[in-house]
Length: 487
Image: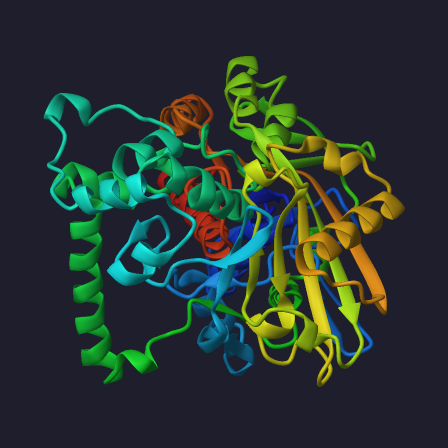
């Protein structure tokens, strides 16, 4: 009779970005609550957090990657509170929430009342120079649009095509294109309406007119705000972040994991399957074994490690395109802030023939990010339309950004310092047909029980989306092991 105690089932999380951290945290919490599992987190780089990286220099809080998350998506804020960071949560300065569009070489305010791509207020729309008269008339006529025939409800189309049908080409070129380039690093002529802006596609199917549907949804939201907050003035901010930077969340998650269960600087080679277990070949020659795996990596990285296990599945994963980006943070001395426009920043349409995609005035977006009176500007390069930006050296990047700031804003101040961060192949592109691709990948994964995916390639690119997919993948892995029973 064997006296060896049964080994707990092992779950490997590959990828230590926010998706993988959320998955590993969920597994660690379940283990501490008595679940018979053991987790290991494997990360190729020498740090955790992925694209979340906060630097603090001379009193400035610099976000190298994302700087916030949408308040309307609850996963990130809920996790922060669970980690004891609730008092560090701060909202964006929505009273200063003015965003500009570069139009014919000058900054024009984005019209008030624009709900992402749908105008909800008449006068700002009627007076904006961003749209010609013909497009303004088309927008007015959109109110009377009827739902499409049922026969047209099963297809997909680009965001550009969808918006142009409803509001005209100028809305696409002057507003929607720079908005999506700034958020997704993508091309609205390729991005899928059903994957990127599904709620608007659903509005069209149900109501026809996006304007009517959006106003109806807005009235319902205001009613809920009044019942819960007492006044629309008390409604939650658009964006939330952590006072000391988003790295606080990464550090807090890491602190909840057992150090010996984290393997940094460990690149995974190939994953193999042997009977009911997976073998993970690591770059240092070690082999990790696990009954279940959460792949919390970009789809192209998952394709590489699964190439030996399933070439067809690897090819499907590799079909999801990614864009790269470069963030450039420039800090300025006291007195320079007055030379910049008030607001959150500006967006640059493709037709303006600039290389800058967007610029954020960090000192205006959040309190406590810069020393009193000083300024912090964050510029974005790259995206799907300009992959070559990633190849620029540091001096070329600084010269380009300062030159465009001077040209656009007549802003010539010498920065105190500049921080440049490059993120190659980091942003999944939800191009037309993305839903079908994801479904095909899900079907392919069914052939490999215990293999799950998480990250920004599946159902949203934001921090909350990544946290949600990471925790869902961890839950699915535990349910799989529970259903399978002891090995």
